[in-house]
Amino acid sequence: FFTTQLTHLALLGWNPKRSELQHHGIQLTLANKSAPMSVPEGPWRASSLENPRVLTVEMMSEGLLWSLRTKEMEPADVHSFETYEFDQIKPEILANFLVDHKGTTYKDANCQVYAKNLMDRLLAHSVSVDGGRISFVPRSVSRVLGDFDELTMRLRILLVLVVLAVTVSTSVQWAIIYRVVMHIQAGADSKQGRIRYAASMVMEDFRSADEWGVRVFGETAIMLVRAWVSFSYPPALWCWSYQRFSQWRAKKNTPPGKVALLE
Figure 1 (cartoon, rainbow, N blue to C red):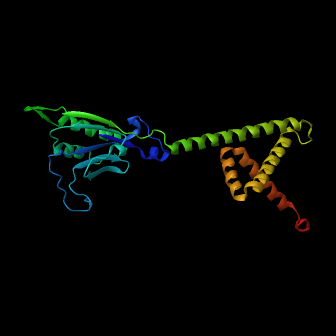
Figure 2: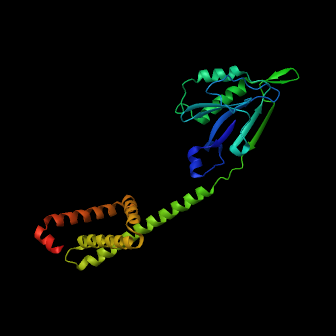
C-alpha cells in the first residue's frame, strides 16, 4: 500500500503529511524466490520491461490504471509505504475483485476508497505459513514515510503573492473609500450637490491615476491593471463605463463643424 502526492497539490507545491490528502494505490510484489511474471508480447508490454515483478493498481480520475514494473517505487517517489508480507497471495483474489468492481469509475470510488477496498480483500484472503500452520495474518508489516518537504519554495512564493495581492487590493479599496468620503464632505458647498460632485471627483481621480500609470508603466501594463481593478472592484468598472459613454454621447451631440474646428 502506498500514497503519493495529489496532482493539484503537486502543482501548488504542497505535500501534506496527512495520508487523507494523498493519492492511494496498491503495489503487489513477487517474492525474491518467485519466478518473474510471464507477460505476452503486445502493446501493453514496453520494450524496456524485462522480468516484471511488480504490479501496481490504482484508481485515477480517468479510470482504473494498472502497470508492470521490474522493481518497487523508491521511497523518494512516494509519500508513504505500508508493506505487508504474505507467503501466498492467489491471483484469483485480485481477479475476483477486479471483476466485482468492473465498470467502477472515480466518481463511484475514488483512489482512497478503491485502494482501501482492494487492500481489505487482500488482507482477508492472503495466507502466511508458520510451521505448517496456515493463518491469514501477514508475516511482517513495515511502514516507511517519505522525506518530502511539506511546504516547497513554489508554495511559499504563491503564498507571498496571494498576501501581496490581498494587501494591495485592500489598500486600493480603502484609498477609494477615503477619497469618496473626502469628496462627499467637500461637496457640501457645491452647486452640483454632494452625490454628483463626489461622483465627478472620483471619476477625475480614476482618470488622473490612469494617466499617471500610462506615463510610468506604459499602456500595456495599465491595460492589465484596468482589467484587474475592474474585476476586483466593480465600481471602477462602472466609472470607466460611464466615462466612455459620456465621451461617446458628447461626441455624438457635437455638430460636425464644431468638431472640425476643435480638431
